[in-house]
Length: 214
Image (cartoon, rainbow, N blue to C red; front, side, top):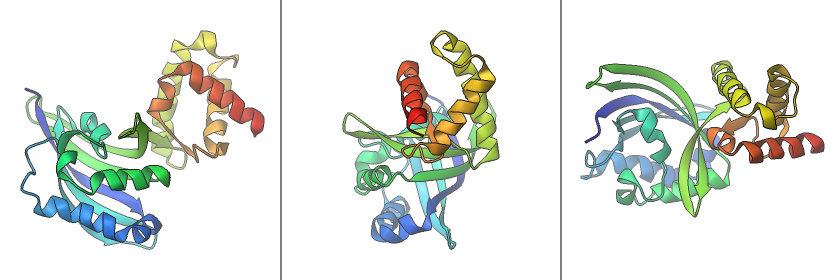
């Protein structure tokens, strides 16, 4: 049996997205306040709207992680996994987030008592569609300095592992091109998810094509 962690924190949705889908988001939130199934599966266990600012909807949350909350993030809006089968609004919300290219910023503290691991993180989540199922990918935004630093670590490892495939002469040139690609590409819109790096050949080809157009 996997160890369980407990996570608490906040999620941030764009206010405009919330206003367009207010009924759906409210029902999604309310479900976690009323469901009798909470605690039977890993994932979210509680949601509550904390504040509505001019730009954002701030949602307080609590959850149970399988080993860790980080390992559970990919199932946040998954179509048929963890507690999703109990939430009738989850798949529809995932579809809206995916189609409108929305991101969810999450700040959380996670504690796993078995190994006494305490983690505090900020992540950006994007919904991806794979074989007609929705999944969540962790990503990085260029308008967040901490995320840019984390992305550079990932890119350095990527460069070392795939140097033979990369046309740039050194890591500095490669990093510069990647950041320009992320910033200018319409589909990426200033952010990138980790799944795009899982196929190095495709990522490098997409970047090259995008930079040619730009």
